[in-house]
Image 1 (cartoon, helix red, strand yellow):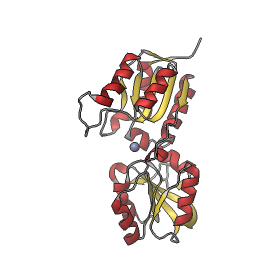
Image 2: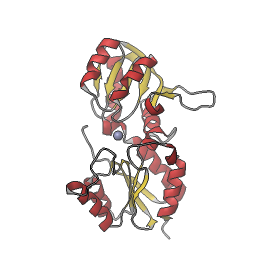
Image 3: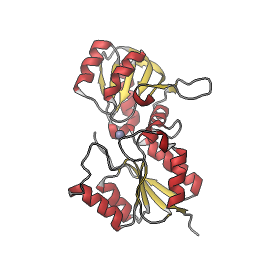
Length: 258
Ligand SMILES: [Zn+2]
């Protein structure tokens, strides 16, 4: 018999494992749209876009699991246009939609920040119990050490690992050994990174002011891509689900240049 898990059981396990109720977020976390009541096959991705839904339907998956789900606080709740099409696709095909935003950024092992730091070879600062020392708004920023090099060299390394050139701002020859990082669209948290005294801050996207902040404060800034920095948490979580329930979980990387 093919391995399967009930939707309800998986939803409960995920909420427990990711401590979903602990987070104040801009979207609901967990099972956002209920589909079939049994799950044998999950497609994971960064964003619950129409393209990801189409892949899931084509492969007859029972669920998608993403970092960027639906029902964001700042968007209209009206179901028109592409929002209607996405939801209609999920409902028509009985697809469950699981979305985990901040809980998946923050998780100490499977989280986007933990996974990005690991891939980039950073050594996170930890307390005596081994808990990563995070700081800034929502305690979302990680900190630690990288192999000592110049800002320019670190920017190249980040681009090589992520397979996408990184935008590096600040004095290219500045020596760097301490690093702060927060995946995705966390460029507006650069102030906290500067105050922390780290040599360089890494996030996904860049805003116009990051250029001036990097030049005027001496804290380097590397924008490594929103999608590129947030590809890894959902893959680690997918592996954990596969290990726990023995079901089929596949990551689909639909590239996004932002
Ligand atoms: Zn994001």
